[in-house]
Image (cartoon, rainbow, N blue to C red):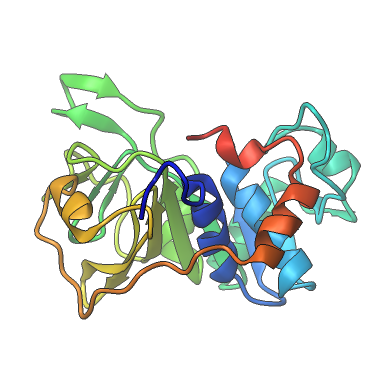
Length: 242
């Protein structure tokens, strides 16, 4: 596909994430999470009207993201929410098995599904010290389905073995700007390739040998999805992470 005239990668990613969500799911996102926030709103408008949106400020199902200045961890999430469910309750909910989906980030991932959000290089003398596990160390192991999203897919990000294991084991999907990975049978498998990319491009930008059962492509956004995205995200927050 000619990338100059094809669909935007941010739209493909958001629609792919939205389709992973089910009606009545309890879904959490953290800071700097514009794409998951828009994906959750899209899912609620398209196929999951009873999805429960949880976030750091604690506003359940915030009303709208149609503002020229809007944060994925801002006070407006609480001010326009239907109810108050603070962050410490989210951790408790996940530990009790009641959190269906957690959208979380990371900096380095390996074929065994380990996530590094702590350091690059040796832990005691790191090249880069990262923010650390924070919620990921608790929510990835305990949420029913943990989804990572990453807008930069390269060999420094997807490695044979992470420099430090911040958390491990309970990933479900990783959505990147090139593809979707699924964690199964103890390894990351290539689930689908975005139509804006190719198997060769994914392989060239992944630091471990790709595993896959078959070559599949991520479905393009539908006209309805694109139309709805323009309505619920008129300021294009979904593109700000690209």
